[in-house]
Image (cartoon, rainbow, N blue to C red):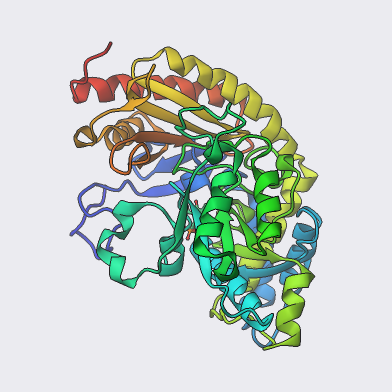
Length: 449
Ligand code: PLP
């Protein structure tokens, strides 16, 4: 175990020990002491191919041997060209041009800047406002953080953030449960009210995750939600940016989570699973109708970064996308997703387990005070954090999130196993979840109803 301040690493958490991982294979990680962890969340919704995939490692090594780095302002590479071609073949509608970056936050920054630059170069400089859902998370750099409704991340940086207009997230903790065809939140008409209040002539973009990430425990909007969003955005000339950094690249059982909604966004951000964790890789997908405006105007997107279009990262992405296609892993994710959700349904009989949401191999499990009402446990108990620590002790890696219920309270546990997970491993995830929950409730002395 390593722990700050020993050694010289400035860790993500300064008051917890970090096991040192020495190898990974499939859904399993092994630390230096030989302890094995079942990676039920692919690190952070990333390792969709599992760990130790030799094909991806070989492709990266081959690219590094040929040429590891060129700058994106001067050169392109076969890896970037082919990756863009492979992705364009999967992306909806006219989203067929790709701008590659390293992280999801960078992709969100770039997409929002592209939306703004598009309107400026289109002769509509007054269009600058951003509308986003709440709760939601779009990244940690300052514009992406501004777009994120995760208040405890933002408190001390408030002076540096821009105002973003908020619309409540659909079909998540709404009293109507997504079933009321007149509910403004769940049908999408709340977006139109927000745009009208802001003045449509001033709104540049609406950004939303087609299937929620850890902010909403993988909440899935009503089937008609994004059709209504699309109509509203068209009516008011607002660019619809689908943030698929977490839910994309097959995670929900379709290549892109927006697909079942039957609409095409104006821009899409992608990341996490597109290189399955073998390299940091993200991107913005854009149609020619938007890129052409820049091509005829300033000539470039004002978002230059040293490591954009990185050849080795693109080679990792290319090998990943090809593996997803040739091994039919997105289809497998859909099939196993149904199996997974059926198994997770069994968790609802456990004490303090509330809603279980999600699609494909993406799931969110709420831990609540009262499963009938969904009322949250007191934040002071730190249930999600304790659960995550107990799960790790039990050899299960999950992703916690807090504060989604009312901005302060709310405990969520996210699961997103690799697409190569077996049914036996899915059973093991559910079993270890139960063990971790029992140990959490007993450690915190939470009364079991
Ligand atoms: N967008 C969404 C939907 C995310 O879930 C995340 C990260 O979790 C991001 C953007 C930011 O990605 P990154 O952490 O790679 O910067």
